[in-house]
Length: 92
Image (cartoon, rainbow, N blue to C red; front, side, top):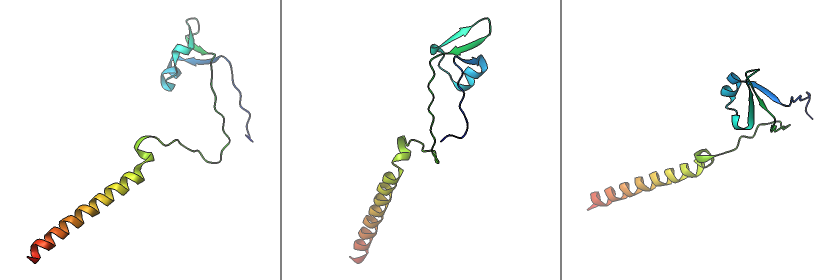
């Protein structure tokens, strides 16, 4: 359960400065010349009550373990090839 109440005012009123700061989509809002404010009626709120915040994994950061494994395997393979070829040349 969420401890505090959530209050939502519709329409959401934002100044031009707040719109720029939050990168709000002004195509979904209405500008009032009288108040010099943007009004938004189509609002989406996502409310969660989790103990931890799970951030979505995207791009390279989701695959870094696999990439690291491939790089380590490649380095070990190259070192073995160089070592074995030097060893064979020195024994002849």
